[in-house]
Amino acid sequence: KEIYDKATLEVLLRPKVGLPGVYEKSREQMIKKTCEAVILGNLHPRSSITVVLQVITDAGSLLSSCLNATCVGLMDAGLPMSSLFCGVTCALDADGNILLDPTAKQEKDAPAVLTFAIDSLEKKILLSTMKGT
Image (cartoon, rainbow, N blue to C red; front, side):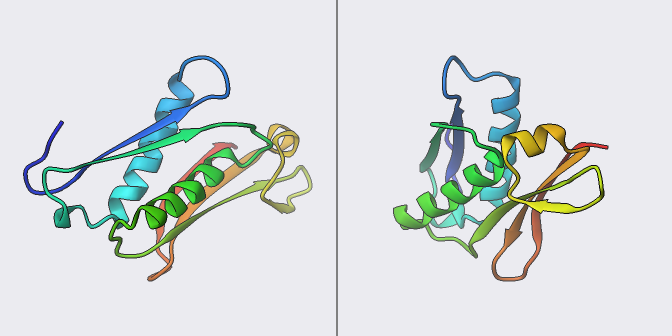
């Protein structure tokens, strides 16, 4: 798919084993929307940018890890961006304490897990997602 006035962005999230499912597809869209908010795509019309994220291991905080890997990859590729972004995951434990960068077990046991992507320039929230209650 080509857009005549800006670059197109495609994000592919590959699980450790098997084919991508609904979970991976939803994460792809979240990462894509975050990237589109900072990439200056109008500087590269009729171009395609593809980000492929391969999950090697999932020890927890997968979405924030993917966001950080994507930002580093875009920087390494030299793509012009209005700002950088970072991903962070936090979980609330049963006592109401906030756990930063929770493990997979802590995420599973937590009543709520939140992930944010934050713009480095204006400190805006580019992505906010919550799982739990």
